[in-house]
Image (cartoon, rainbow, N blue to C red):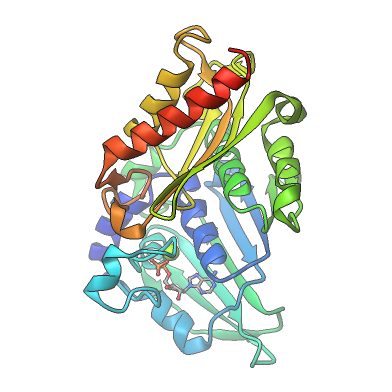
Length: 326
Ligand code: ADP
Ligand code: MG
């Protein structure tokens, strides 16, 4: 069991940011409106994610640490219509097999919470504790029992940067959730929850920089089967790295060739080749139209009708870029 979890961990848990990604996705799936993340030494020494979601009962928490225990998929059919972010039931046991993990959680019905601990795959006795409704996951000493993998981690600062980029993506995709990030005890990001859609650009400005708001245009086109929405920066507002293009498919941040190619093609004659437009783009397709199961870390998707997605984006962007006088 521990070995199987460590093998799964090899796919899901690449670095501190991938642990935090799984934990924050769980918090979002649990309906949290505030998610606080802490990391020390680039996450290598400590990572903690605290949410105010619905929490788990002791039985649910215990099950959550068991491989392939997901409360989100019930039949094989469901695998083809994934609406929640998590679905494999692999994250918590994988992390628990390569680190020291404490899962503390409380549901509204109970006056107390419960804390479960796993050390390199071995379960310890559970404890009651006083805590607000929600879940707190603490991960210490990542890869302490797999030195070969520990060696592959980058400098603390590099790992910390990955965590900051990750949290920015969450902030863009989930404006109704408040996010805080502290690194080595110092708060480095605080995105307040945005109450309604009209305030969304405030969140975008907070993440992408204040100059984005007066220098971007909104796009929104398509139909119930396939829609592209988002905000695209003027060609003058470009960056030297592809990470300037924030792309989401059904709420999930992705690296996708089809979407990237459509965006770059639209801006092709408007900025130097090595520059990238600042964008926050959301492609929404029928869950049956996209396979999110391509990669365990879920950063890649496969569209059933990639050409249609490409075409819609390309046409929509051409229209607004033309409107910008470009
Ligand atoms: P998955 O997200 O793929 O279902 P995980 O291993 O990430 O698998 O989590 C296992 C289960 O634990 C989830 O299905 C969910 O029921 C529960 N869980 C995990 N994290 C939380 C959380 N922060 N709040 C409430 N429930 C959680
Ligand atoms: Mg999960």
